[in-house]
Image (tube, rainbow, N blue to C red; front, side, top):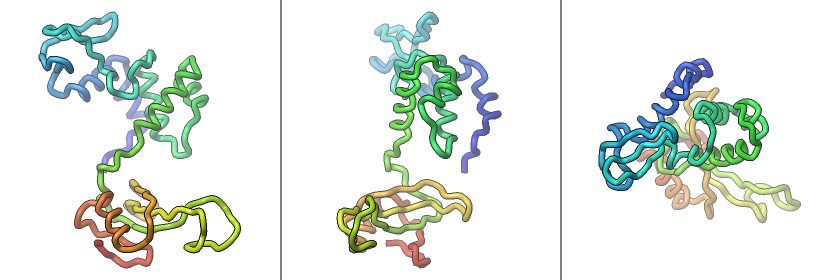
Length: 210
């Protein structure tokens, strides 16, 4: 399991603008610069704009292109801090609080960044759950008069799978609306989101592998 980055670790790893820039460069080009347009591997650095200009086609590439930081004219240290605060805030963080803690001057910029982070953190669903998994289904919907539970109208039946690393801490989770709680629907949900051959626990306590 990956180590949780503390605030002191964060300050040490990304202490300078150069450290943040170098980190993004290595993420985008782990084997050295490759031009996105012509795939040439040589470039000159335009220091005034912090861009790499391809020596072949002269295309200018940025380390932030294709990231949530694209077109945000803010110091990378502030943007990295925003990511850290967003990802470590258990109860979420507002745009106003993000603006205050990062020192971003414009509320509109802080709001846009927060929107980009939320969109970027949205799960693609392509990484299956691997730890011991607990599976259940439930009805979700607003409070209405009438029958409760499985007989409720205007509510959606949702399958839920959660990694249960230990009793005090849950891991990742997936939720999906399903037509019914039959084996076919749950089996498809398991196939999509739980690693093959991974045992999981139903809420009744029985181990299974649909």
